[in-house]
Length: 536
Image 1 (cartoon, rainbow, N blue to C red):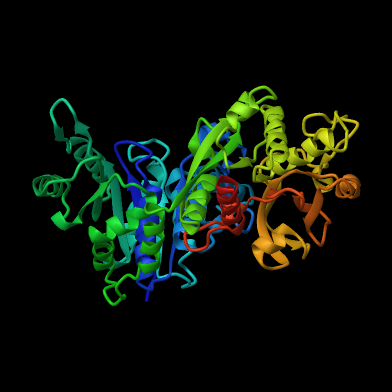
Image 2 (cartoon, helix red, strand yellow; image 1 turned 90 degrees about the vertical axis):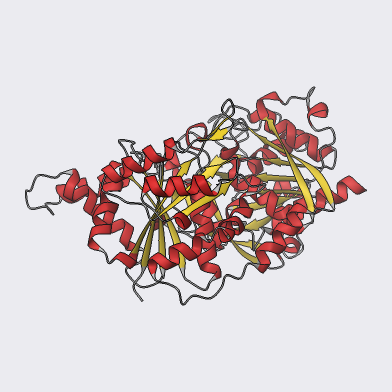
């Protein structure tokens, strides 16, 4: 069977949820026994989101092979429970970089390099790359931005060309739009969707399916009107109404028969009926909790929830596993000091100090660690959060009051956190951190070993600084143990305080590997510890 391709574009406004719709369709097709993958094409000119401020673009998601990617790849992995790679996220910057490099090498034999055909040919090559070896039955390509954006035009043109080049049943176009409700008129309006589809048609693309984001149910009359003016069948107008959880969307899309319509267009009618029993069990636990806990998420980007998207989703997975609701209270680290800490952490059952970069908010994170340690509140520090735990312990237990990371104070007399040796020669920022999955060996008498149930793990990283190995023995004598290390480099991956009910710092990012079907054991254990702390 030829690999089939589905292209998902958005209109009217951004942030409608193309990533969730793409992941939901992929989940339904996967549940029918098909091999599915999703890729994201981002129109911005950055090579990748690795150098973008989280306020600008949300979190930077890191894949197993070390690619810094769009946060939508996190949704893809959480829904499908399969790894993505650097091939699953392509930016305009990467497209142009490749074409310009080819031009410098003389690959175009002196021809004038143009958007058409050279840029569009490279986009098409990337769109077809994942499907060329026959590893997948269906490849879903999500195009960032909205139809009509200047940045998106080369991608729309590339899809138009592919639609013309392919057989009719090898390609489907899905368009996600908004059906706004005007409160003054008390009615839904279809005109924005009509204009968006018309703009798509002006670029030479005809959608096969229109998915309508809406706050109110679409009447049969509205569906018929959209179908008539947008030149699609009435059953191809899909309602995507607001849901209690993004994890409910696949079931909603199944009710709307989105998978059946797409499969009909692609002539994939021999696939089995979707089996979503385990997915439904997860939702049942999510919607019918037996308890609840309050967790403090301490970070410096808390104004934008997408900055910690994977952490928040990991708490949802872990909460369902523990059959409890996890109420995440985002606390800005700059607002925490010795005087305010008690008030900030009142009625909090666990503390997570989030990853990040730079000096801003560091002292607040250190104070949050101290409060959790001294009051026996379950604690998890991730990446920079672990580093702040090391600094806090050095200051208040080892007695090094001026201990610091060399990221902030290069000449600190006690550099308990130091720049990694192989990072000291680097001057280029983009894509040069320690990225991707690395192995870690766990001490068999550690809490980490008990949580994971094995002594070898592999977790994803994104950092330049590490715990200074010169201090490890001294920390251990005072009660902070390095219980996870990389065997090849000796890098400290995990620290613990055995005398504390639950105090774990990890240099890696466990949130990047938590999925609905496999909640991350560290988050499951933290929520379990929070329940014990609450009920003791």
